[in-house]
View 1 (cartoon, rainbow, N blue to C red):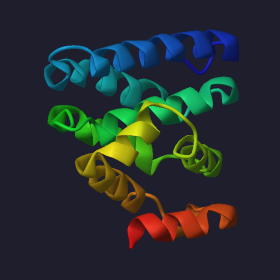
View 2 (view 1 turned 180 degrees about the horizontal axis):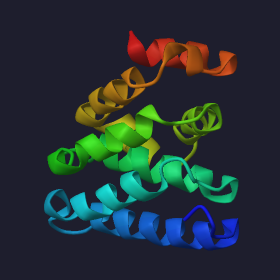
View 3 (view 1 turned 120 degrees about the horizontal axis):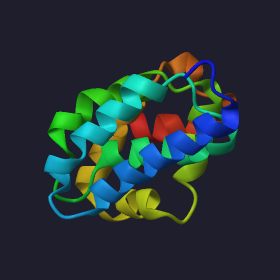
Length: 143
């Protein structure tokens, strides 16, 4: 992977993200997310091109938060690995995403289970890695 040009890496990661998001939204998602989450966590967690970073943060966060019924437990360790490795830019994108109109923010606004899971997600982030502009939002979620 290290020797591939960034546009090729982006293409491969986009495909992996698309596969994971499709599994997440599909029937039996709790059984089908694991191989896609594992592939993404093992192969790309430190090689996410800037051009697709927002999509990466969105899909990983969405899948970790899950839906009103739960999260794919078998895939959770892989999501946690990726979340713990979020860069400062990725953390900024996370806070941006929860303010936008998307499936993730809708889940956070409508389902207490998803809110609780998002708080767990935030606890994986180092408090020092939270940008100053997002500190108030971070504290609101954590408390």
